[in-house]
Length: 228
Image (cartoon, rainbow, N blue to C red; front, side, top):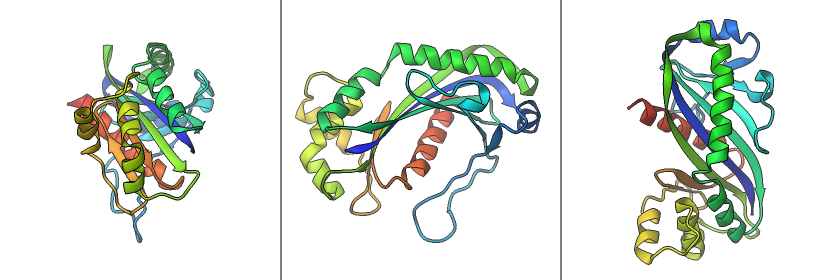
């Protein structure tokens, strides 16, 4: 399989981030985030207040533990650090990757340090900056190509146990009951796409062009969870 793994680390850093002021502070480094979808016609989702995004390299963070870095700034005071890297391997490799990354303390520590460095830089754009931060983290394992064409039902039937173990980050096989609990939340739009969301991670099977909108929605949902 080939695809990628994305780790989101979201921090509630202030009561508000004044996005026009942020554009001034990070002049030339930020652009509006966009929401797209795979259905025909105009996108059916849009931001009322689009967050701003900045490539990590533009802010001095081109790499973090082998991940590419991107920052996103929401007007309601949340900064999201997105870490991405490519994946290629077997189902066993994917499960092992989940065991290493889910609740990875070193990765969380380094993402927090990167966020603090950026927040220090954008101080003039913050309203009600917080001294202590609440945070959320979420992992997405996205597969964009399999060695043989398969429907979503085929993947769940043949590798449902792998997907459930991946999302739980467990080193031992799960019970049938726990496997079914994870898989009952699966969603598909077409016959060959699949999203299985769990509380701290998600498995995605889709085209390379369709994965970014899914990541955008999962990131936004976690930013709202952090605010609640």
